[in-house]
Length: 523
Ligand code: HEM
Image (cartoon, rainbow, N blue to C red; front, side):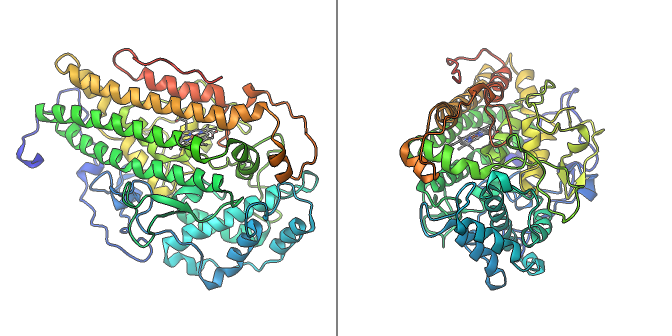
């Protein structure tokens, strides 16, 4: 029992708890409500100057994180909005069509594509107030509206491409996005977190007994798109056990006595196994997702407003050009899971050299970590905001507000793991080995992921699509398209080669000893 142990006195160099720190606050007793089925968040930036959410534990309802499902919601996702919002659901159904190849076309000029876009412009503007009674309604509304928005933009032929989003989509999308703390574009939360169903949807999801096995919405109705989402959701649920170990480790870090160090060694060894499992699930994309379909048919629908030479803000406000924000499309880089493991293991991605050659340079003014929509002062010593936002920092903005808050909370823990491991390196070689072992596993995850990126993006960019894919794209002859693979960017807007390599190298840099395994190079 933890409570029977007396904590060792804190070393002199350990930082005392700042006033208002989450560990010094009263625990929250979240009660389930209609709006928050897993318990109402007690997170209040006002109690703590925006630095310390009022929470009792790491995996808690305050952050919409659950020990059983991790960042996936425990409550079943909605498959359809109720009657008052039928018109949105009908527009979504019509865009997708009845089966593979029956939906709208990218840059579509057929009467069907044109009529669908005109119908969107003519839709009535629906009231969103009734949605506010349930977070499940809000999530589904964000998903449906953003998918329709991407259909609207990317089904338009290049000559007619408009960046003015029709009011029937834009007007409800703004308040819905604000309440969820999400940007007004399709995010990983829409494609994965709010879009999966488990094998038996009437029961709570579970990693092995009731795993995510279906996706509700898609752009293409293809099995590849569904499995792309489902496998990502399986990574998430598999990560729940890693989050639990991290929470237990943080409890031990706080005590930091001899028993704690032994336990930490065990937890870190187990964590390495779990990270390997996430990597193996990621690799299973190779069996279940067709790389050509992914690259040519699915991925183009994901593009955000910052993608490509024609990148321009999507105007949600009629007649106003004040909105100059460019947004990226969905990417698993927006998953909080790997970011949480990075923060826990103290992998530093805040290199000051800009990793991104941004289309729209992100300046310090744009870089705020938000809790309850209040920007945190960049002068606070505990939060480092570099001059150029790193990819990871940019991706924070695409996570649901409670998950962003969770990562902030994790990053402000007063006793980071790495410094404790260094402090005890001489006397606890097994702890160092376990810590480096977890980092080795994270490096292996990144290298497995690089193999995925190589197959699904780099290799596809180098070759012509097959006839089957060309016909699906409505192309009758080969279109010679020479892609300079060195210039390739992800849907999250990052230059692939440099970025993924740097993420991997930052992982090995955190090791206390020397990296052991061979190094994979993305070619
Ligand atoms: C077909 C499957 C996948 C493809 C093609 C893919 C592609 C990419 C690309 C292109 C990036 C660069 C960032 C950007 O979007 O601009 C990226 C980043 C990232 N992806 Fe994936 N991804 C896939 C699956 C996954 C899965 C299942 C995970 C697991 C959660 C994952 C986790 C990440 C993470 C954490 C990053 C940030 C870079 C890092 O931390 O190393 N990806 N991905």
